[in-house]
Amino acid sequence: MSTIAEPRHRAGPREWLGLAVLALPTLLLSIDVSVLHLAVPHVSASLDPSASQMLWIIDIYGFTIAGFLVTMGTLGDRIGRRRLLLIGAAVFGVASAAAAYATDPATLIAARAALGVAGATLMPSTLALISSMFRDAKQRGVAIAVWVTMFSLGIAVGPVVGGALLELFWWGSVFLLGVPIMLLLLVTAPVLLPEYRDPDAGRLDLTSVALSLGAILPIVYGLKELANDGGTLVPLLAIAVGLVLGVVFVRRQRTLASPLLDLRLFRDRTFATALVALLLSMFIAGGTYLYVTQYLQLVSDRSPMTAGLWLLPAAFALIVTSMLAPVATRWLRPAHVVGIGLVISAVGHVMLSLADSPSGLAQVVTGFLFVYAGGGPLIALGTDMVVGSAPPEQAGSASALSETSTELGMALGVAVLGSVGTAVYRSQITVPAEVPAEAADAARGTLAAAVAEAEKLSSDLGAALLGPARDAFTSGLNLIGVLGATLALGTAVVVAIVIRTPASGDGGDGDGEGDNGRTDPAEKSAADIGPAVAAQDGRLAP
Image (cartoon, rainbow, N blue to C red; front, top):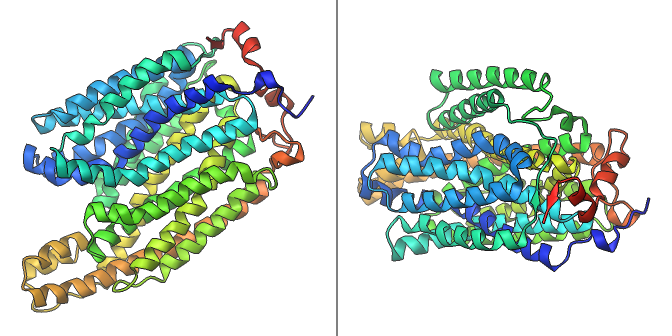
């Protein structure tokens, strides 16, 4: 069998235009990650939500995305990935308008929940369609790198775009971004995107859907609450309930002829290792991003929009390395490219571990640039490994697992590393005796509270409070840098040892491997099916 894809298997202009269409929701969803946080003060002033309602406004989007990703990825394999994408786009557009013009907190919470469900249809659908459209492994690697780049670009421009909209318009304008983008997607997708479904997928098991939601939602909720309030009983019970239901879910999948999640995917060591590596990478990134953004605003005293500008170098470094990673696989094994990137990321974490509070801005920004630059190859190539090592008819499920891994990794990073940093802050802060007791108690909780209390005090006393508070917070950032460097290096070693996909220049095609380290012939054959052949079995429709 030839290792070079024949011309009829290579993507043409229609597929590349289709990729541009798929980039739209990817860009929008990544922008949405950050813009609401900037709008929180404006939402509070306009809708006057309670503290509990404000938390639900912020968190419900992430809860519903995480909960529905696996279900929606599998549903796309059953009803058609393009159809699911169009349904999700329509719901996302309507929910965006509802959120923008919400007149009370309950309406905004409901709209955000609908946005999360719709978002859960968009991300796995876009990634699964890319794997269907780009059969050639090299082209698929480039296409996924573009997909990752658009996500990175959204993270980069999100704070800047959000800050500009909030300065020019009302808070609802940050949600209206979704309406024209989704309208454009609805118009162009039927023309440029193929339909793809698995005719042998079987019926959707609703019990498995309920169990997956019952497993994921309590765990995500518990992790977020642990990050906010520490080790209280309710979030710990929620995590325990989620884990128990997760075990029940896994046991049920083993007994079903058409499972919601085919556990056989995890037998491929490339798939399993890349999935774990993505989770660990997002774990590191979640905690680090949380602390770097707070450092820029609370330690270096930058506005949200200015802080966003300081984050641009790191985001653009992520874009560059994501795009260059597939090119580098012409000469190096993908695992080695990922490993080198993670070593670069570790260097950045070491820089963060050595930063200080009064004069560490340049070092923090540079260290964060290295962290993001080193993570680019893993995000691009790791995602390709996960999707490319799965059979074509299960690309939706594989894409959903990839997204679930990143979402869960981010939640874990925020919860675990956020709690670690908070513990360091509370153990090291020293409050001047002259500070009133109520203000001192608040300042010992978080740096944000210390900054708020300092503004109420005289300039000299406020400065005396902020100095040690900022030093204590930076100590937390330093420890997160040490932990991040350790995890990045450990992940680099595991990836380099376990994943043995050859460099594309060595005659390999970059597809997944079997457990023996060689390209699985069955998977190779499935990946090489041309559109004309696939159309005959009903999987790819025009």
